[in-house]
Amino acid sequence: QTSNVYQQCQGCHQTNGTGIPGVFPPLAGHVPQVLAAKGGREYLINVLLYGLAGEISVKGQKYSGAMPPFAQLTDEQLAGVLNHISTQWGNDKALPKDFKLFNAAEVKAKRATKLSQAQVLELRKKLELK
Ligand code: HEM
Image (tube, rainbow, N blue to C red; front, side, top):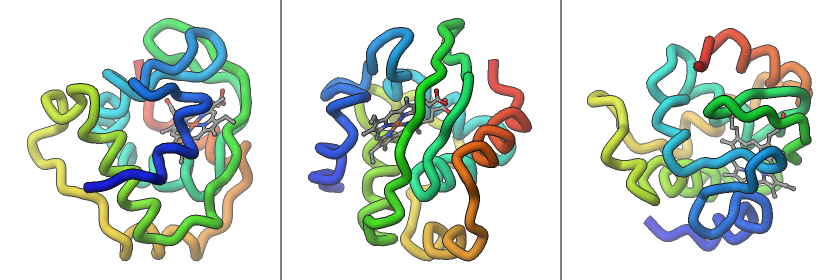
């Protein structure tokens, strides 16, 4: 699963997915937590399509930046980068047992319901992430 697309993420989330504490949240060691939450998979697709803004907490650290939307990428590219962040940096070892790779069709389906960055934040709150 190639991800040239992740090059568009690493300026913020860093090559190794660690992010920058307090500025850009980590994806390494974190994406599996999101996937384990009910609605987490759909939430991740929405973050990529519509971005995210407002205060969040990841591993006890607060972030209140904004992530831009990436709706300009194709469904295939978005599924690919979602698979990348789900399986890199040891994340593959922490995935829920029933995890299946993301596919373009489920990304496409989420394009029908347009969301603001603030609405994506509301969806995140419903995940009840620790
Ligand atoms: C949040 C992935 C690009 C800045 C997130 C989250 C994911 C993610 C999954 C949600 C984390 C959570 O809810 O716990 C990605 C991917 C990218 C990308 C796959 C590339 C396609 C970027 C870029 C920036 C950025 C380029 C900086 C310009 C942020 C920030 C947050 C965030 C600041 C937290 C927003 C907030 O505090 O409300 N990212 N990201 N991301 N991302 Fe990205």
